[in-house]
Length: 387
Image (cartoon, rainbow, N blue to C red):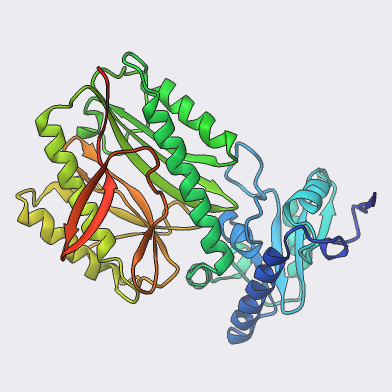
């Protein structure tokens, strides 16, 4: 057994211990090369990362935030030939042992009662530094960093497929177990349990019983009780990457008007998925979806809620808007979640060279076959449980 002593004032290197994931180490090396090129282009000496999404991206999955908080407990400082994590002495061992083992990071810590900003100022002193926040007159290059997060690397592509399966499984298992009279928050608790049990952090949960979403498209969950049908949706993260899925369950056959709304929403979703093509600007994809809303006599429905998001190290890296010039690339993920009246559908896709892959697949779930441009797309239909 190897024991590593941590000196609160001297940097230690996670490169001194064997990595448990060689592919992750290679991935981090590639990202450091990307940062090096960015620094060279902007004639800068270093990059300071403080936002959780950018830290997760650069470390290929490390979570340096305190549980229950969205703020980082550490900062990552990158130069052309080194990478360092700045933190306090309380968190140093956990970060070194669990978050970045064997990945070639140095860990530099100060006593917990000294502000982390003091350590960061010492690192930045005498250097031309860029950052993802613009703190202390550093050059804010957050938009340039966002462009580096796409497309996914091979390892990231595998990881987002895995979290997609886990999120879809949790949502579907929760839906299959609902009972009449259960509150939305009880169902959300069951969903959260299933996600956490499989190592997925719940980021957004929605449980909308009996048409709740007609008035509140962004409803989370409350004390209302399920009587007839329910929409269940989750955004979960693992290794810093997010995926999302939405499913609808009904106790007995739902009203015909709801079935119609659900199938219209599926048509919008399928259209968005089919036209999520490499090198397409988002507004080109959106124009096709908007046309279907108009064709099926619900031209204003899309105005009641957002339709889709590019998803990755954030639940919404960017939203699909009418005039968005963001270009889809091979290896980009999107969460399509259109709604029509009381119905809402949603799945995460990964854009590939020749097609799109549904990464929140159905397991034990009824499917609806939707035709788009003579191409058949299988999407989740309404699960009808015995009344």
